[in-house]
Length: 113
Length: 115
Image (cartoon, chains in turn red, purple):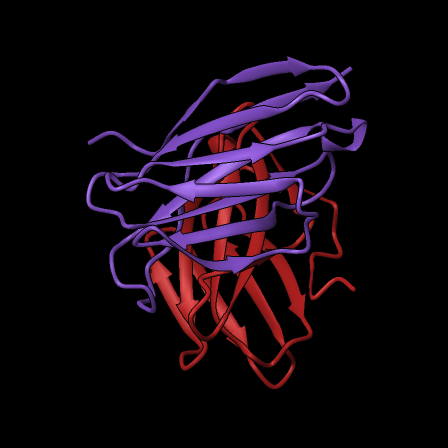
Protein backbone atom coordinates (compact mmCIF):
# COMPACT_ATOMS: atom_id res chain seq x y z
CA UNK A 1 0.00 0.00 0.00
CA UNK A 2 1.67 3.17 -1.24
CA UNK A 3 1.00 5.82 1.43
CA UNK A 4 2.85 8.55 -0.46
CA UNK A 5 2.23 8.80 -4.18
CA UNK A 6 3.85 10.82 -6.93
CA UNK A 7 1.68 10.05 -9.92
CA UNK A 8 3.82 11.82 -12.52
CA UNK A 9 6.98 9.82 -13.26
CA UNK A 10 8.38 12.68 -15.33
CA UNK A 11 7.91 16.36 -16.11
CA UNK A 12 9.49 18.57 -18.76
CA UNK A 13 9.58 22.36 -18.37
CA UNK A 14 11.20 25.23 -20.25
CA UNK A 15 13.92 27.21 -18.52
CA UNK A 16 12.49 30.27 -16.73
CA UNK A 17 8.99 28.79 -16.41
CA UNK A 18 7.37 27.33 -13.31
CA UNK A 19 7.79 23.66 -12.39
CA UNK A 20 5.02 22.12 -10.28
CA UNK A 21 5.59 18.73 -8.74
CA UNK A 22 2.73 17.00 -6.98
CA UNK A 23 2.42 14.48 -4.17
CA UNK A 24 -0.59 12.79 -2.56
CA UNK A 25 -0.70 10.93 0.74
CA UNK A 26 -3.22 8.74 2.50
CA UNK A 27 -2.25 8.73 6.20
CA UNK A 28 -3.56 11.60 8.33
CA UNK A 29 -0.96 10.75 11.03
CA UNK A 30 1.83 12.32 8.96
CA UNK A 31 3.02 15.47 10.71
CA UNK A 32 5.93 16.71 8.62
CA UNK A 33 6.56 16.69 4.88
CA UNK A 34 9.80 17.11 2.96
CA UNK A 35 11.04 17.41 -0.60
CA UNK A 36 14.38 15.96 -1.67
CA UNK A 37 16.28 16.28 -4.94
CA UNK A 38 18.46 13.46 -6.21
CA UNK A 39 21.13 13.48 -8.90
CA UNK A 40 22.47 10.18 -10.27
CA UNK A 41 25.19 8.61 -8.11
CA UNK A 42 24.43 10.98 -5.22
CA UNK A 43 22.25 10.71 -2.14
CA UNK A 44 19.02 12.69 -1.81
CA UNK A 45 19.57 16.37 -0.97
CA UNK A 46 17.09 18.11 1.31
CA UNK A 47 15.27 21.00 -0.39
CA UNK A 48 12.40 22.25 1.71
CA UNK A 49 9.93 21.03 4.33
CA UNK A 50 6.60 21.94 5.86
CA UNK A 51 4.91 21.11 9.13
CA UNK A 52 1.36 19.79 9.04
CA UNK A 53 0.19 22.88 10.94
CA UNK A 54 1.16 25.17 8.05
CA UNK A 55 -0.11 25.47 4.49
CA UNK A 56 2.85 27.17 2.81
CA UNK A 57 6.60 27.42 3.20
CA UNK A 58 8.90 29.39 0.93
CA UNK A 59 12.66 29.32 0.47
CA UNK A 60 14.05 31.30 -2.43
CA UNK A 61 12.85 29.79 -5.71
CA UNK A 62 11.17 26.88 -3.90
CA UNK A 63 7.69 26.94 -2.33
CA UNK A 64 5.84 24.00 -0.84
CA UNK A 65 2.06 24.06 -0.45
CA UNK A 66 0.13 21.70 1.81
CA UNK A 67 -3.60 21.02 1.47
CA UNK A 68 -4.48 18.81 4.42
CA UNK A 69 -8.12 18.35 3.51
CA UNK A 70 -7.11 16.99 0.11
CA UNK A 71 -4.02 15.19 1.51
CA UNK A 72 -1.99 16.83 -1.21
CA UNK A 73 1.24 18.77 -1.35
CA UNK A 74 3.07 20.41 -4.19
CA UNK A 75 6.50 21.88 -4.84
CA UNK A 76 6.75 24.99 -7.00
CA UNK A 77 10.08 25.99 -8.53
CA UNK A 78 10.17 29.50 -10.02
CA UNK A 79 12.01 30.22 -12.23
CA UNK A 80 13.16 26.78 -13.29
CA UNK A 81 16.83 26.37 -14.22
CA UNK A 82 18.63 23.60 -16.14
CA UNK A 83 20.50 22.71 -12.94
CA UNK A 84 17.16 21.81 -11.36
CA UNK A 85 16.97 18.75 -13.62
CA UNK A 86 16.93 15.79 -11.22
CA UNK A 87 14.60 13.28 -9.57
CA UNK A 88 12.42 14.86 -6.89
CA UNK A 89 11.12 12.81 -3.98
CA UNK A 90 8.29 13.72 -1.69
CA UNK A 91 8.54 12.28 1.85
CA UNK A 92 6.25 12.22 4.87
CA UNK A 93 7.01 11.53 8.52
CA UNK A 94 4.87 9.77 11.07
CA UNK A 95 4.38 11.69 14.27
CA UNK A 96 5.76 10.14 17.44
CA UNK A 97 9.01 8.62 18.61
CA UNK A 98 10.19 7.20 15.29
CA UNK A 99 11.61 9.69 12.82
CA UNK A 100 10.62 7.40 9.94
CA UNK A 101 10.17 8.86 6.47
CA UNK A 102 7.86 7.37 3.84
CA UNK A 103 8.93 8.29 0.32
CA UNK A 104 7.09 8.56 -2.94
CA UNK A 105 8.48 6.96 -6.10
CA UNK A 106 9.90 10.21 -7.44
CA UNK A 107 9.35 12.55 -10.39
CA UNK A 108 12.08 13.12 -12.96
CA UNK A 109 12.19 16.84 -13.80
CA UNK A 110 13.86 17.91 -17.02
CA UNK A 111 14.36 21.65 -17.48
CA UNK A 112 15.00 22.45 -21.13
CA UNK A 113 17.31 25.41 -21.96
CA UNK B 1 31.56 20.73 7.70
CA UNK B 2 31.53 17.16 6.46
CA UNK B 3 28.21 15.69 5.49
CA UNK B 4 27.05 12.15 6.10
CA UNK B 5 29.77 9.77 4.95
CA UNK B 6 29.22 6.16 3.97
CA UNK B 7 31.62 3.36 3.15
CA UNK B 8 32.23 1.54 0.98
CA UNK B 9 30.72 3.31 -2.07
CA UNK B 10 30.34 0.08 -4.03
CA UNK B 11 30.32 -3.56 -3.01
CA UNK B 12 29.87 -6.83 -4.87
CA UNK B 13 28.89 -9.96 -2.96
CA UNK B 14 27.53 -13.39 -3.77
CA UNK B 15 24.38 -15.01 -2.48
CA UNK B 16 24.64 -16.31 1.07
CA UNK B 17 27.44 -13.97 2.09
CA UNK B 18 27.27 -11.34 4.80
CA UNK B 19 27.93 -7.60 4.45
CA UNK B 20 28.59 -4.67 6.78
CA UNK B 21 27.95 -1.09 5.69
CA UNK B 22 29.21 1.90 7.63
CA UNK B 23 27.94 5.41 8.22
CA UNK B 24 29.30 8.51 9.97
CA UNK B 25 26.68 11.15 10.72
CA UNK B 26 27.07 14.90 10.49
CA UNK B 27 28.95 16.17 13.53
CA UNK B 28 26.50 16.81 16.38
CA UNK B 29 23.77 14.60 14.94
CA UNK B 30 22.66 11.85 17.29
CA UNK B 31 20.04 10.15 15.13
CA UNK B 32 20.93 7.81 12.27
CA UNK B 33 18.50 6.10 9.92
CA UNK B 34 19.05 3.49 7.22
CA UNK B 35 17.08 3.20 3.98
CA UNK B 36 17.11 0.81 1.04
CA UNK B 37 16.46 2.16 -2.46
CA UNK B 38 15.84 -0.20 -5.34
CA UNK B 39 15.75 1.00 -8.93
CA UNK B 40 12.65 2.99 -9.79
CA UNK B 41 11.46 3.32 -6.20
CA UNK B 42 11.84 5.78 -3.37
CA UNK B 43 13.98 4.95 -0.34
CA UNK B 44 12.41 2.46 2.10
CA UNK B 45 12.97 2.78 5.83
CA UNK B 46 15.00 -0.02 7.46
CA UNK B 47 16.09 1.24 10.91
CA UNK B 48 16.40 4.32 13.04
CA UNK B 49 18.80 4.72 15.97
CA UNK B 50 18.87 7.56 18.45
CA UNK B 51 21.39 7.81 21.29
CA UNK B 52 22.51 4.23 20.51
CA UNK B 53 19.03 2.78 20.93
CA UNK B 54 16.81 1.37 18.19
CA UNK B 55 13.79 3.65 17.80
CA UNK B 56 12.20 2.16 14.73
CA UNK B 57 12.33 -0.79 12.39
CA UNK B 58 10.82 -1.12 8.94
CA UNK B 59 9.34 -4.17 7.27
CA UNK B 60 12.61 -6.02 6.68
CA UNK B 61 13.55 -9.58 7.70
CA UNK B 62 15.73 -10.43 10.69
CA UNK B 63 18.68 -10.88 8.32
CA UNK B 64 18.98 -7.10 8.58
CA UNK B 65 20.47 -5.69 11.77
CA UNK B 66 22.15 -2.47 12.82
CA UNK B 67 23.84 -0.77 15.71
CA UNK B 68 24.99 2.67 16.72
CA UNK B 69 28.25 3.38 18.49
CA UNK B 70 29.08 5.88 21.28
CA UNK B 71 30.43 8.32 18.66
CA UNK B 72 27.01 8.05 16.89
CA UNK B 73 28.40 6.28 13.82
CA UNK B 74 26.44 3.26 12.70
CA UNK B 75 26.72 -0.07 10.95
CA UNK B 76 24.12 -1.96 8.94
CA UNK B 77 24.61 -5.73 8.68
CA UNK B 78 22.87 -8.02 6.26
CA UNK B 79 23.26 -11.80 6.55
CA UNK B 80 22.53 -14.58 4.08
CA UNK B 81 22.41 -12.19 1.14
CA UNK B 82 19.76 -12.71 -1.54
CA UNK B 83 19.68 -11.40 -5.10
CA UNK B 84 16.83 -9.11 -4.04
CA UNK B 85 19.11 -7.32 -1.57
CA UNK B 86 20.83 -5.61 -4.50
CA UNK B 87 20.11 -1.94 -3.93
CA UNK B 88 21.46 1.44 -2.92
CA UNK B 89 21.71 1.61 0.88
CA UNK B 90 21.37 5.12 2.24
CA UNK B 91 22.24 6.47 5.65
CA UNK B 92 20.69 9.67 6.99
CA UNK B 93 21.35 11.70 10.09
CA UNK B 94 19.38 14.42 11.83
CA UNK B 95 19.89 16.73 14.75
CA UNK B 96 19.62 16.70 17.64
CA UNK B 97 16.20 16.46 19.20
CA UNK B 98 14.41 13.25 18.49
CA UNK B 99 11.04 14.86 17.84
CA UNK B 100 12.10 18.17 16.38
CA UNK B 101 11.18 19.15 12.85
CA UNK B 102 14.69 18.79 11.54
CA UNK B 103 15.25 17.22 8.14
CA UNK B 104 17.24 14.08 7.65
CA UNK B 105 20.41 14.57 5.63
CA UNK B 106 21.56 11.72 3.45
CA UNK B 107 24.92 10.32 2.46
CA UNK B 108 25.67 9.24 -1.10
CA UNK B 109 24.96 5.62 -0.28
CA UNK B 110 26.56 2.23 -0.75
CA UNK B 111 25.69 0.46 -3.98
CA UNK B 112 25.41 -3.26 -3.14
CA UNK B 113 25.31 -5.79 -5.96
CA UNK B 114 24.59 -9.45 -5.31
CA UNK B 115 25.74 -12.00 -7.90
